[in-house]
Image (cartoon, rainbow, N blue to C red):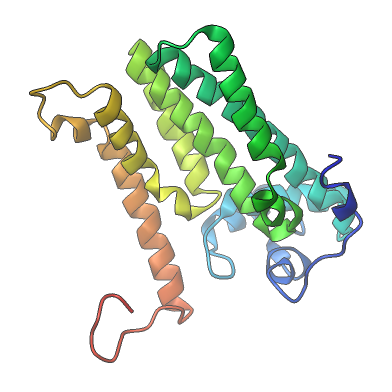
Amino acid sequence: FLIYLNTLHSDFITEWDDRAYVVNNTLIRSLNLDSIYSIFTTPHYTDYYPLTLLSYATDYQIWGLNPFGYRPTNIVIHILNSILLYLFIYSLLSRHTAYKEKANEAIATLAALIFLAHPVNVETVAWISERKNVLSMTFFIIAFYCYSSYRTIEKRYYYDTSLLFFLFALLSKSSVVIFPVLITFYDYLFFCKKGDSKLSLLINKIPFFLLAAIFSSIIILVHTNIGALHEHPNGSLLY
């Protein structure tokens, strides 16, 4: 909190996304079954981030349009992410390296502290509209931790939990569609034995790739409908 203390009394940045996500956002004005249904069925602004909007709606019920109440939520989530990152890195080191426990703890602690205090995260934590970044990371880390546990402990519960939290991450910010690729590389690095079929690595990733494809399609459709995507005059796919 000390790192971001001077941001708590800042106003909304209405010249940018705060106006669309919070100040003028009628979807977050109430929190009941009808409003939750609208949040989950109505793309907002240029994206589809219903869990992020739901978190704004929760803040709005407490603080209204007082910006003071929104940033502490971002800060608390950021601190939670640092703790989750520590646990995740510690678990990876314990499972896949021969380091001693104290070394694992030291490395995980250093990584978490750097993440917690690094200036690169200031915009994400201090800017209310960037709630989607910190919230999606929470679910992303949990999903990866659960998948790693599934591959190590081989209990179906961890696989299903990983898939569920990946869904939550997608509902917070669609850029986490990269998750299936990352867990594929993770399996390749730590669990692929010589002679194993590379195709076998993808079998248990199919549900993850399907979710990624669905949400990618939703975002492309939303962007197309608002005119954010245009066909290149020369027909190039890189435009």
